[in-house]
Image (cartoon, rainbow, N blue to C red; front, side, top):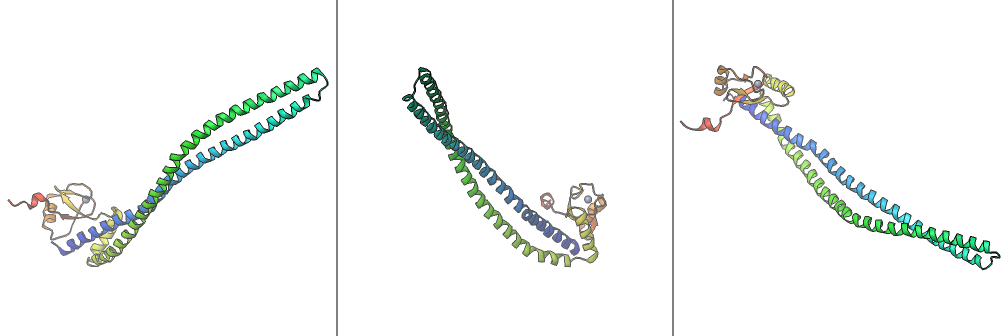
Length: 242
Ligand SMILES: [Zn+2]
C-alpha cells in the first residue's frame, strides 16, 4: 500500500477517536446539569408540600386561639347574667351565648377537619422526603462518576493528541492540506473505505477503473462526488481463500 495512504488512514483513525472523546467529554457538563435539575425538581416538590403543611398548621393554631377566645367570650357573657335587671336583657344575653357556642362549634368542626388533612399530608411527606434523599444521593454518585469520566477522557486525549501531530507530520503537505479542507467541509470524515463499489462517505457509486485502483492501493484516489480519499478494506469474504 502507498505509505501516504497508510498515513492518511491512520490520521483519520486518530481524528475519529479524538472527536469521539471530545464529544463525550463535552456532553458531560450537560449530563450533570440535567441530573441536578432532576434533584432540584424533587426538592421543590418537597418544599411545596412542606410549605402547604406549615400553612395548615398555622391555620390550626389560629383556630385554637379563636376557640379559646370564644370560650372566654362565652364565659364573660354568662357572668353578666348575674347582674341583669330585666327579662329582655336576660334573653339577649342568652341569645349572645348561644351565638358564641354556635361559632365555637363551627370552629371546632373546621379544626377536626384540618387535623385529618394534616395527618394525611404528614403521611404523604414521608415517601417524598425519602425519594428526595435517594435522588440526591444517586445524583452525587452519578456526578462523581461523570467527573471521573471527564478526567479520564482528558488523559486519553493528552496521549492521543501528540500521536495526531506525529501522524499529520508524516503526511505530504499537499495531502495534509486536502485532508484539512475536507475534514472541515465533511464533518471530520475524510478517509473512507469503499464497500461494494460504493464510497462510504457519500454513498455514491465509484467507477470500475477507480475501484481497481483503490483495491490496488498504490495511488491516492479521491471520490469524484465528495472528494474524500478512498481505500480498500478487506472484508471477511475477500479473505476467504478460493
Ligand atoms: Zn464520496
